[in-house]
Length: 167
Length: 269
Image 1 (cartoon, one colour):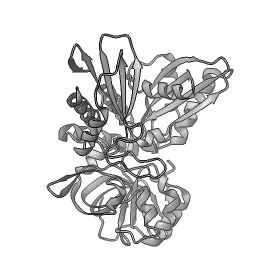
Image 2: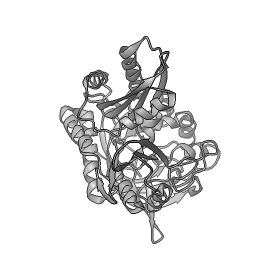
Image 3: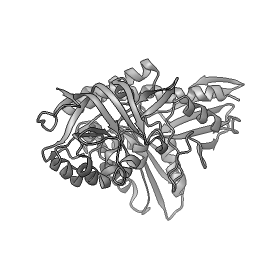
């Protein structure tokens, strides 16, 4: 199933496999924490991706070389507050999150999607372009990258409507 | 000296998986169904793309770790090698001060890159690079067990470590098991064990591998037949009143590359 990041998502079931096209914001440890006290570049109702990409600057333009997911559970403590503040449509990551995070997501119409860990090259091959980067002072791995994806997947629906995979 | 070759070693390690690991992944993929199979096929596709485009398999190129086996250090400027590799985006800038969390920007830092010298009476020097990812290392454990408990308890500790990791260490994993030594030597044994190929297990390694797979955690923790691709064990003499055990978890993306310096010539091993 194809999903458009800029449109409202259809109702999905646990285990569904989707491919996402559109803009995604990479946010991990430092950015998620900082977003609680400062206005985050992702804004509301967007797709957040737990990822620290490997990037390269060529002639002033950024290129993503590898962009697989990082372990989502490290962000467990800050996720409920993050979800209530920014109401993301989806969080993409790996390894799953905790009950409190899933509960906050359910209350805010947010799903959790898995992308296969370690598949950085595959993910990078689906990046159409780097739209922008913010908070670069956090380092390239922890900065907020706005990436435009074309059929990013396979993404597995791992939490939706109160149900979730135990990982 | 040999900085150019060491740089190529680093690049090779992050873009191409060792043959024994790829073979084990392919074999495991055949056995899975459903969501587990989707994960394995994703991994195989990733391996193909990384090789084809000469880009890092996984964006987390981990801790920069070298292992040197020989009579003496080869006189390679390891810091300059990782600096160049970071600058050219072969490896991601990962090293930070542990307290301030400030990124050094070039994978150097106090004690980084981590160079482990193992003295061996050989007529050559082997240089290995292991970009160890954060996921697996973060779920690894060391414990000082009761020496009277023996192999059964060691297996129990290993199983518990893998069970707690669940999907976070990107299974199917490889286990480096260190037994003996001191608390720190034990952890080094477990890491050193990950340099060896995984397709020649001994009886105990085979036994533990079977028991880990029986946990059913599966690829990425979605449930399945293969949770572990291999177990490598290393032992060392230890104190009569101690049983140090280390379980080092390596994710499926088990990256390692080695080169042999002999008579001024270098070849891949």
